[in-house]
Length: 320
Ligand SMILES: Nc1ncnc2c1ncn2[C@@H]1O[C@H](COP(=O)(O)OP(=O)(O)O)[C@@H](O)[C@H]1O
Ligand SMILES: [Mg+2]
Figure 1 (tube, protein in one colour):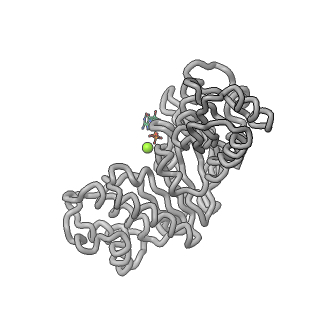
Figure 2 (cartoon, protein in one colour; figure 1 turned 180 degrees about the horizontal axis):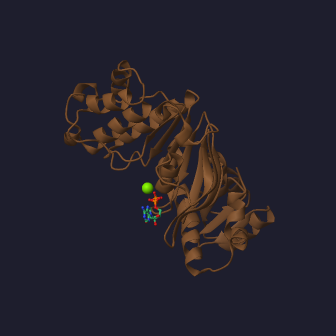
Figure 3 (cartoon, protein in one colour; figure 1 turned 60 degrees about the horizontal axis):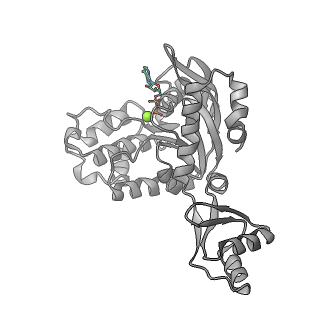
């Protein structure tokens, strides 16, 4: 478990992380979502004691990172896949990590196998592709067999096969009961991977909620209808209790009924339909809207945080 409380980081005038509080729980993948510059990497660095918070606190299983004995056996992290001595082989890179953390040598072979690098284990890391570098970074994170894993944008720059592999790995680690915390700036990626979401924008918490809840609240579903008898159908649909809006060029969008119900209602009244199609607004759109609002809002506002939360965030930050 990772507990974050009132976490804040300033760089001069810049507030990179602003009073964040949330908990990352075991047994599920928690997605850490936000546009570039939102403060995800800064938060993760503070979790690992690599950056000192201006205010607030992070506890790893109840303890501060710098007080953990053999920290790699508690929490494994991939923050920057390029943070490898290029002149070392993959094997030697992992062996150094193992030896300086009291981890048995045999574990090096195990994690190389897990990430699929056994065949290139003796090759120098500087010749590795981006995808191989990510796999080596993940091997390092797994080395101490930790209960908590953290990955910062692990799929950046990977091919579809690599993305699929990482996604499957994260889910299987969570299924083993581990705590898995993974950042991304892409909603589409998180939608397929995470069961819980922590969303930030401009360093602030925008949402802390289950993925199912996020989907239910954000992916508006409606039925798109075209008919030459628009006025008549409009009256019938509204009479049946549906909310209907006209969305230009004669298209109707009906909320609150299925396409089956609408089609049968139209048939009973001999209304001709040219189109009847169920629609789903995408999560990516919902996420863009959510984070864009926070960016615009902060750019024009000098209202204090409490009012600000009421203006756009309460709905979000209070959940989960
Ligand atoms: N060492 C630093 N010095 C100054 N500003 C920084 C530093 N690290 C990050 N920032 C700023 O803090 C903000 C958050 O950055 P970051 O945590 O990297 O965001 P993310 O990982 O979500 O893209 C950005 O505006 C970034 O420019
Ligand atoms: Mg980052």
